[in-house]
Image (cartoon, rainbow over all chains, first blue to last red; front, side):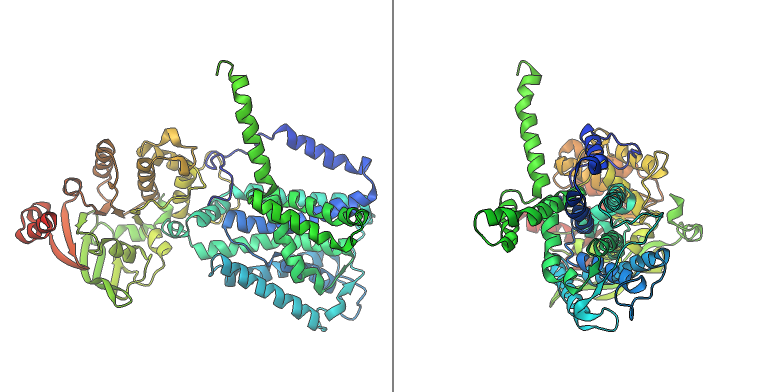
Length: 349
Length: 262
């Protein structure tokens, strides 16, 4: 099964790729959004979309390019969030060290990346369902450990008052600055994944996905390559995790509980794991459902807490009709339209 | 491509043996797929391995490349004991192989496949930087694509290639880098007569320092591209000799013709 879309050859490097007009339009919409959208949309909808999208993007990289479905990405993100709370400042003065931002951010990313790499090193020796099981097992172990450990993770209550640093005199937790912060980080992560997918590292990872045995017979150390891809994905997840803890202003064991871990998988699958844009589409759909379905449900006289029912039904419908997510629907729709248009443009046919 | 093999190691190539097997055995449970194989292939030698189905030819290849570790015996590659080496370490020492059933990267283009093969035996396997247009490996990949006549399919996904084209691509992958010994596992199987003669031309056109071992059922192909022949039977070596000796050997004829008449 080829998960990635057929692509132009890597061997013909295209530094300035032809960017379709729709991408420019999207960029314009995203950049000007604070001018016409309210703070709620900026912070609660778009902020969450970018944050969850980044974490799901790290799963897309592993699953789409590497063929490895890892459920540890949310835990890696939470690890980075916890490290920000522990090495930076929080409401829990006994534990937090209050280091400056330029120290605790790299520390958080490095520790989370090491965590993700170690989990990866265990997981890459397994295939398919066993990769899912082992990463899920470690994710739930991480959840229970953070809930029971009070010396480092402050147990059940976690850390509150974890906010971004006041840099350049801007309060980065205000809706507009936070919107641009998350947009910028999401854009960087997206760009990095797109770029690396055509670099030798990413190409080789796709080779490992398609045929690990042949990759070894071409001189590649398949295990090392898979572990390294976990490291790369962990860096992306940890950036998402740091933004997540700032968005919440707190972190607790439930941040990386089993429901949250599954949500990341759902987001990635809804959007589509064949392309890096998929997780962001999935995250937007998920956040919109989570934000507005309580109102819809209440209007029908149902309990507003049942938004997960809508997410679940939507997920079921989607995997049933389009196993490759919204991206797959979109691509099939475009292919059909192109076929239908052919006779017109072709003239005589 | 010289970066793949340190100069010191290259100098020892011309004299010694490319491959030395001593008592190599591979058991699958209680079944010995190959047992006590002792075989020497000189550098630059071109050897055909013949034998009926189940004779252990492909298992022998898998042991040499490291796809399987042998149950017993030692494997020396270019004078170095590689018995316990993983496959990628052997490949980086100048060993290559093709597979009986094409093992390619179906999600990638022809050019990507060959580029990966070139990258696998050079530095920068983990590079996060996209190759530049001036990248020597890209030029090398294009040469290899041209060598197997696939230049018109360069940017086509491998999944869309015909069977014969996939076989040709297999060969291009095996020629990447600086191969010194190539194992061809039935490269002619399923090819049309035209493709077959193209294959023979490619094999005969290989530089003299590149040796190969070829598994081939088609006697005509095998005897035209090999200077020595090993006959395998039931997991052991049955006969070794020049093509003429093997062709005229009484026992070989009985074995082959006996099977044919049965």
